[in-house]
Image (cartoon, rainbow, N blue to C red; front, side, top):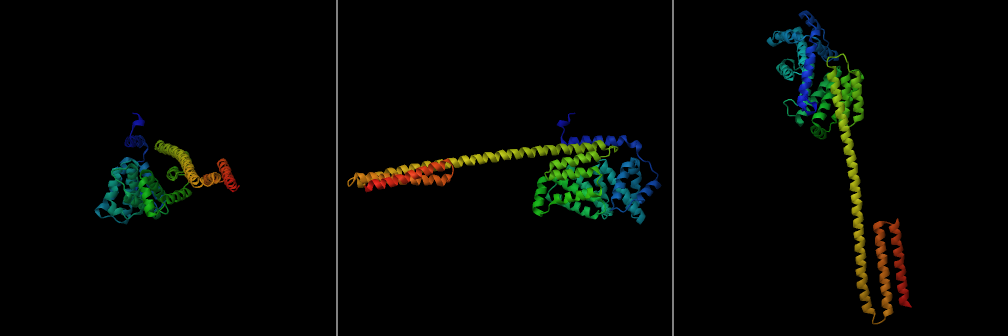
Length: 395
């Protein structure tokens, strides 16, 4: 199969298949725990708003054998579903629920993930970490455009949910990162909607997301994915060089011992190719715009020069016509009395027209340059002609 001819959906399906094959290959190393061990680990989880809660839950979904997750964990939900659970059983059930949902998301079983969240929303919807998992699920839908027609209102709701979640999980940098990644996804997948939302709401989501990811890295500077999200936000802001630098850091910091190492690095390299292509496109557009501006400026100068020449020809033609008519009029009126006076007045008229034409040229071209020198010379000649004509008439 030639990857160059694959559609985006086919590439995603291929990546999902490879991911599941990798997961299946490492099943032999999964932990097989007794029920008492499972209860001990779930009960030892910290408060759900802390970062360690998320890290441990994700770790359980990675390390535990599939039989435990699919067969043992649902049993902890039975007392809650029956309405007979006490406080301890309720807490244990929610912990098991979190591991189940994270497992389905890690295995890319998006439909199963959504079903778990929808079926238990009434019971667990008040939990802080439930909203975090709900946000992650919706982020997956936005990334994959799964069965959802996103619009301005749904994108705005998602952004507000992400911001609310980051506030609720103030002791968990995962909440801050989820907010930053949500904004990155929105700019990547729905740029036109984000531009409209930002213009309508007067909220710079990109600035807020950059501040969130910088705070995330301040708290946890060694997690590779955080640098990838930082790169995506920088690219959305048009800083492709900085984005490529952050991706390099992400690749360097990625744990090569993880089972999904190749997939993670491959994702970083995909973003790197996208950013390089977008950088090149922006560079080409900038060069084209510069050439267009130069062409436009040259065209405007040419039009201006043509207009000036036309005005000069019009002025010269008007002067010739005026000189001809004036000469005939003067000649006819004065010739009977004195041919000498008529000739002198014609010379005066010619000098005056030369002066007017020269002044007209100075107005068009300014008082500096070669053309200005020519116009000044013509003006002086006009003055000389006027003075000479008057002197000729008086003598």
